[in-house]
Image 1: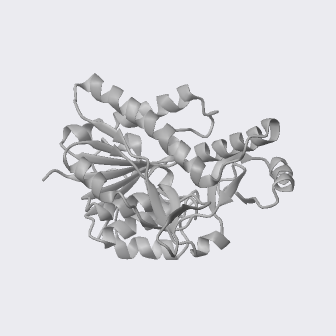
Image 2 (image 1 turned 90 degrees about the vertical axis):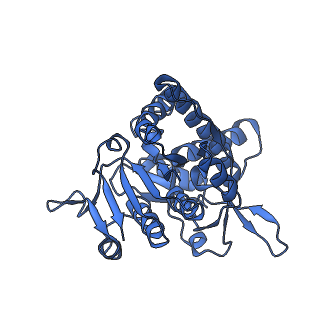
Length: 314
């Protein structure tokens, strides 16, 4: 049986911090990230790709706000906006991956699945929103927006890049279509799914699936899917080559191969920022604890370098 790998694209695979988010910029970024996957595909790996949508879903929410204010168009809820970005980002990844595969002479099916992910309506995250969405704002811009939208919550970025709106990020419980994803992936189709962590929904007392205002962490959702489809490896692509302790301090230290006990201690000690590296580390821990062989956190350009990145193992 071929090796099955789940890869979660980070936000920088789509949109860099110094960019406006034009289609040309995003397609160029996705193309460069997809090129890094070629050695994995050539080695015979079956791939499932997840991706984030933080900047994109925030921008879509702003577009709905502007459409409502200027033209009186009805605003749509966050779950609807997540669905929009799943389709648009999935389209970009699928298109650019097809372009890359064509250039290297690989023939493979690539499919994007718009997917819902079930959460618990009573998850405590709904009382403590912490998932960043949308662009960075100055403190003055943030104060104006808080007056216009009294229900919005903002947090300052840990890297002091500004303020961002945050929304609830409940834990993923189940992805209803995981069996279809596994079947497609194990027969050689590259599957793009759980975009933006999945479209958030809950099951009511009558068994009905209903959308809910939230953004699910894409790393936790991708990890959950990796467990469900019994993937061999789980990889998170981010904007740094390694996980670090004492990040950006004089005694900063990068982690290379690290066991579960050590990485869990660093997590418990608060070494990793919530809304940034902490969910990535937590997602990798959950994958390895539930039967996964190894989990990797690194930058896309490091994928082709054996032994690079932070590898979490039992």
